[in-house]
Length: 387
Ligand SMILES: Nc1ncnc2c1ncn2[C@@H]1O[C@H](COP(=O)(O)OP(=O)(O)OP(=O)(O)O)[C@@H](O)[C@H]1O
Ligand SMILES: [Mg+2]
Image 1 (spheres, rainbow, N blue to C red):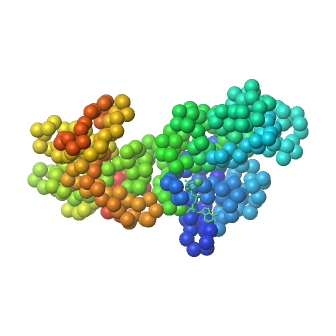
Image 2 (cartoon, rainbow, N blue to C red):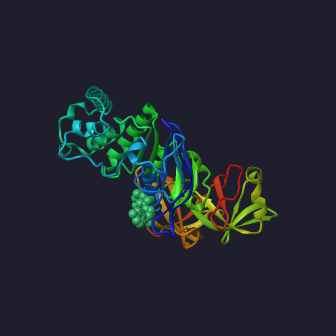
Image 3 (cartoon, rainbow, N blue to C red):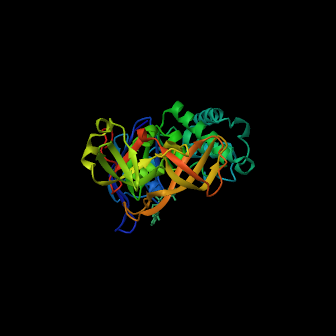
């Protein structure tokens, strides 16, 4: 086992625009770290550089303390699992599992021992003599995992290994992979664009955008204390509502003014977030999770008047998108904190099934105990736990 360290790593394909920029990241010994981000942000490139399939343009990659920049893939002792599995169609499952070990010229008995142990661990023993095309998608996925496991590699590198599976199987296998990794304790760097996979599988999650790391933290910390509006919008479904507001202190206490509405803030807000005080009288962005918005009594003057635009009923909860007199901003995934789009839509997650008609008027109430504050450039305002 070994740690993987990216030290100021850069990658250019064209010599000009880096697709990976100043990457500093450590996957600790035995850790399961998920690298997540939108399509094209550079995740696969990071993984392929660690595997040795792509050259590093600048900086250093160390695996188990050893600089691997110039080592060919086979000398890095890493095992990679790809999205398309890359199984040999003309070989049986047994042959597919044996293949990497034969390449290493291991003794036959050792090969047989490892293959049978791995097959047993993954429930593949009954299908060892079958060809990949006769297997289900889930079984094929397990063969691909098996081919990584037999090698006794120091680290696993996985690039979207579940994206070819249907939704139900994906849920089952993501639990299996996390359990398997916990058992084997092999340092794992796992790439996905799916925030649910990231949140459920990673011990820590690194969020990447446009070649740069936005934040690395345990899943719950990402959810509770996103370092930027980008992370706030990416983690959670629907993402956080980000509203233009002004922080005001008046006779009635402290408030966030959101258009013509006054959202009273809790008295202890400065003790929780001291640097916020410097923002009184200034424009900032207020983040509200959809779970923090509920339906207010229709006579409640504090409620924000809104009209139903769309609802999505999931049975146990209803996602409501409602138009209101607020300005919700969204940041582009590619450009650093520009290209803002503005809409008047608030998203809320309501418990249970709520049949609501399109256009139906209602009032929304915001739970002010769980707000997030961001500077206009999208970075979280330095609450104690913020970087
Ligand atoms: N061989 C290459 N030559 C030139 N540009 C490349 C090459 N490979 C990738 N890129 C570019 O580098 C950027 C990052 O690509 P990468 O495949 O790492 O993204 P990704 O985050 O894995 O995306 P996805 O979620 O779609 O797999 C993209 O803009 C891509 O077009
Ligand atoms: Mg990719």
